[in-house]
Image 1 (cartoon, rainbow, N blue to C red):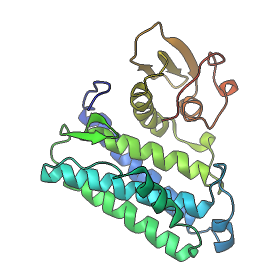
Image 2 (image 1 turned 45 degrees about the vertical axis):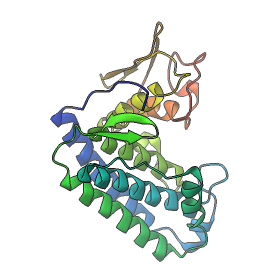
Image 3 (image 1 turned 180 degrees about the horizontal axis):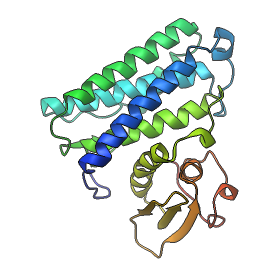
Image 4 (image 1 turned 30 degrees about the vertical axis):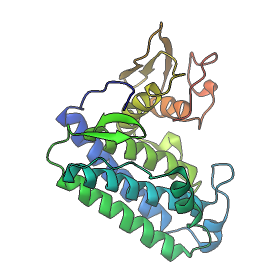
Length: 240
């Protein structure tokens, strides 16, 4: 497995990310209870996706991560998704279900992933994440980014502006790691208004981009344009 060398997050950061993931997951599940069957079938904030399809993706992502974690606990390397087709099939299977079925699926998948994380004793174990070797400790950060961004994408009233800066910061920890895996990644220095700084560790003179932690995350994730931050007008960030 090639890619960027990454360090295992320290215990304080890991515990913070795990707590943020639990809080953010509960917020997502609490919000989705209110969604009607009609609204589940309607468009999400992601072009071409219904809310039901997006919910299925959130659930199947939890299942996929649980497979990686459980594999690591057994001393085995398990890919996130066996094939791209398997990922797409899981998403399509979410279309047309009732709101109750969608909610039960989300509750179960998120709960089972949480239970697998609870079993981990050695967070430094390397795992294969889409062809890149990463420490197991980074997976809660990745899941957190998935949960908060897709909560926004569901278009059920949650906005990036509602994101707690500390939670956004943990999601940014993942974002810079994920972006650095891409061969076309730009060198960046991200400075949040709240005081934290991140760098995308690739060769070149870094471009400094500033803004709120939520704004930086939204821009890096393609949910916000360069006008949401400062210094990003001439920067192209690969999807991650």
